Image (cartoon, rainbow over all chains, first blue to last red; front, side, top):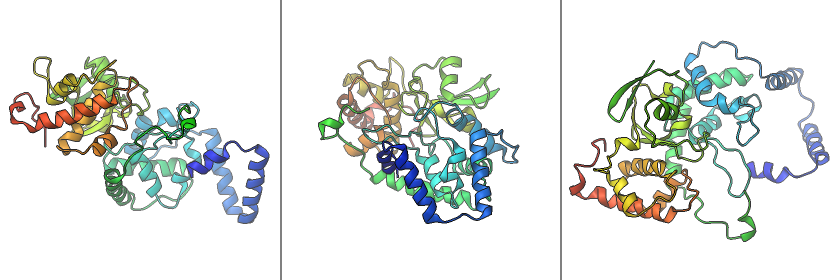
Length: 183
Length: 165
């Protein structure tokens, strides 16, 4: 998806609008419920409303200490994190994507300006990551809580280990010389 | 007050739980090997070892370190008795400006602790997260291979730290 976003980043805004109108048409009229939900999510994302107190103090303190300085720092990406109120990983029905991101981070794409995030696999244990994920879901998700988050984190960590052991990273400068002077 | 276990010693530091480990290491404990590079967990110059794993200390708040053992470069060896990884980096003259080197050594040390004979591919994959602006990468790779050989030889056991699992 990152490549799609990157490729479309240079199209004129009239094209972006046309794609949005087309997609909205394909998806049909949203139910009043869904519409309300969407508007609430957007309003929350824009206002950056203060966090309601949560029983999940562990997740809240990890978020405040490890995540908020980037995600609420007000710097533009990639030096600041995305607005978590707009995160599809947090709003998604399944916590797996979010678990993967927190564990492994987001690596920059070679030769492109792209989002970055450090991984926390080696500094947080499964219980801490699960507490963080539950906090994020309640704070930013606008959705019902997930169940079995710790199990998801465990599974994601196992897969991540296998992936890191087998994946070969980019080895050399791009063969295409015109790519080399890109940031 | 936070309690931290660093290089085998227990420290009481007057810092908030959300303080990044790097700030406490450098500002309070004067352990200056770990460097502040980007502050975003992207360059690796702040790498230390926590419970055997390479961790970016600039994005690791103290509250995540409860009950864990932190090792910094100062904990591996001394000037008179450098650890194998330090000796290897010196012998290969792997540092140019040196800013990235403490982080490089810590990540390489963590790798060698869990995998004493890494392939070139494994070394490259592991060190990918640590950036070097000078471009001494080939020397760094040689140093890590040399360190693996040094650690393999028994003569070095006195200078080696005892935390190898």
